[in-house]
Length: 334
Image 1 (cartoon, rainbow, N blue to C red):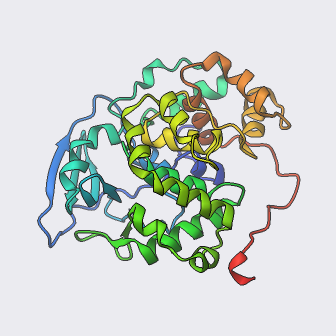
Image 2 (cartoon, one colour):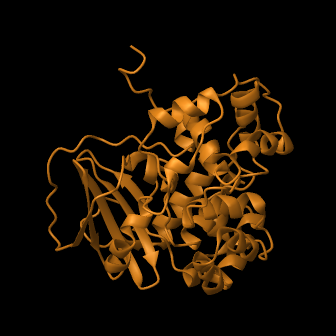
């Protein structure tokens, strides 16, 4: 019976990058003429697992899944805004794109879906990791090739609950972003351009629940946006070093960014409130583990530590909660 039913997504598995995808129900009509590309992956591929880390909450204006089995995302590419729709039929992945950035998105479709990742390089050394790795053969680490679209929401997630951060991202993108090109689902939008972020009034940050420290970090980042986007062509280690030159961007934020922009298979998120305890509990029964203990437990997976951490999150094995959830704050009411 153990293999007959797939486990339902939990709060932890969602954080690990699990998005529930509907089964395809046939082609969706598209009134605009999209550019199209098909690609055949060289192994198992689960769109929900691969693209899941790009979604910032169920109401994310830049990411949506639809009942026809499609995943939609918007991006501000170097050549302009674009909308990408990805579906899978049998062994073939089909990408459709609209807007000035359509060709750019389609050119990088295989990398986005983990073509540069090698899951076979991971050697599990713990029963939980072996079981989860076997259960999720379609997990691959994506690479967007875009820095700011992962950096800004990661900054918004600093020192607050995920719900507060997702709300801020949703409100700011919907209000100051561009409408998604093409026949995208309702209320999808493209992330604002760097200059638009720089011109957001202070009271709008406040209404979105973003304190001055995080807003100032975003403003410092967008002032050097071109230099930060250059980091997409660097190694993950060099990219992190460049990002951390911006005041307010530390190891936690840089790791969360390069995990998505570079597909950084070894970038461990340190400084996280919950991750050390989850890893410690899963691998050693130590719910009070700190960063040093977590790194020690992940040492056997050097070169693959981010994959190991994601598999732990996706396993759903977490210690029982000992205190109430951190309350949501809303500085916009002050």
